[in-house]
Length: 444
Image 1 (cartoon, rainbow, N blue to C red):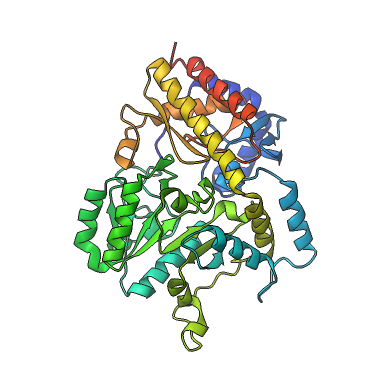
Image 2: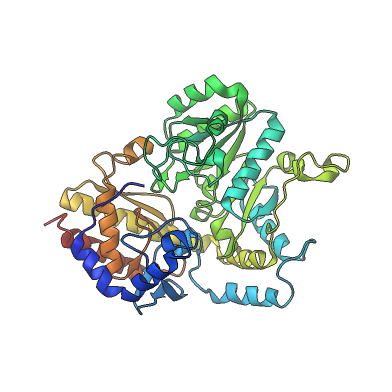
């Protein structure tokens, strides 16, 4: 990860605002690297330590209140401690939390809702994390095709497994193609193609098509800064996969809430398999692989004379508490809820783009639905190459200035809306965003 020069005035404000968080950070780092127990990343110059949260708000140990635009690392689509989700989990706690046998009826309710609203899904299997789901989908594609290689977009992120980490990523140095700790041979199974460039992508895929088991694609490059796909790009991938007997996998771990039925509905492109996670667990660990019956039946013994073609274990896949939370989360994620989220996201993106025009600076926004990416780049960010031209130092300092005003997010310039957020809160954030440009001296 690149180092950034932080605005020292804002760093001073942060230290005065969060002295207890700073002390606890130092204490926790003695036991936990970075002081962060897990999650997607850290915050510069150091993180807040959260004491409680409700709705779209959270409070740190110093008593500061923040509008939460991070959503528990993109998970809490209905905000913190939603009453309905809490009640569903508490009811389930009184029945059972984890069993080695099928339970009735939480997983069934989640599966039914996913099948009803997602065009590509006829059956579904549950796991615990997005990485789990993507690895399972890859194994299914390999079993189905008898091939081994995986094709994915340059700059994409699909999880922490070796085969998923190989390649170009904004999360590492540009020349770090094979991350430390990943065996060199992992790269032999990965083919990268340009994002949002259908001709170049197809040219690369044509050379390796006979060895490719799956094309794994996010309809929006989320970790790279919420870079939305072009419809024709996804359509061409679908057409190429069909012609060459390749399994097309949509990674909708992050993007599923952008529309009722996921981004695949928004783009009208139907994958063979879909991986889901984050929001579908309502704040508890849950992920899934869904797809057409011919693929999902690889896991079904009754479809293969009593012995499944493929066996994939997941101890916490379909955990009862996660499914109880997920069933309620999806029930509340109605078409109207999606419309609200999309309206908030559009409002944020339009306002940020307007700020760029107003001050004649290369500030602009990307994303879909409730996903907002903010960039400072002369060329509009549409792929990995243009994303690498982004002035991330400016974005990091804008985020720090916003945090000092009570707006919480990751430090990489991505912001997410929840159904707990309203226009008033977003208006406040957008005004603070404009103030930050003046505070930091980026505009006069």
